Image (cartoon, rainbow, N blue to C red):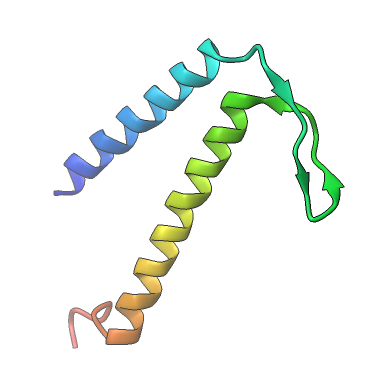
Length: 75
């Protein structure tokens, strides 16, 4: 099961890298909470948004498992 997750993660990262390298031309600067962000390519902003979504998902899954006590397998 973990091998499948690693392969899927590598495929995702590879696809994201391919997407980023093929779409480097439109450079935009976003305004977040009234402050402008550095000008980055659109593919980079999309990659940051997807990566932060994955990170948030993993953190929420971890916290949910800990709240149910599922993280303690040997006890």
